[in-house]
Length: 215
Image (tube, rainbow, N blue to C red):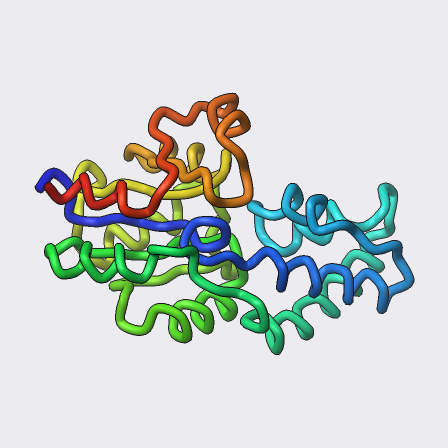
């Protein structure tokens, strides 16, 4: 087996979190007196962490103090409601189980706040990941390779024996910066054309295609 470790993005890759992100964003905007956004707009805003999501969702030229307020309202609401409508993509739990049965190690690296990553992975994928990392202080968010390298160090696996799986341009850049190949998925928050424009080299349309890597 060429690879020992698969590192997954969370939102748009193993979990469909879009509806809860959308509802939490609109709740925070409405509570702070700003116009709401559509689900498709929120889809385009995610990928670089919650702070960047909020910065993109508020009107241009919004003062930082108000951005901070929206961010705080979002965080308090999302912590309680991050799993209301979220669910794994079809086939993901079964594929993760087969990967682990084959001896493959699995991990998650996400730009989502670490508290939410820990909650969601525990609730939806108990025992399915060897290591999990979300956004936290002192670690640069993706596409910086910091969290990926921290996972490699924790699991004692060299980068040449790891592969990254994600649904966005951020994931493609993250893998490149970490010195590993990337598999892009087209069931997430970005379509095939977008991924190709941003340098995707390998795109899959079904989770089961990941099992080809353990043949």
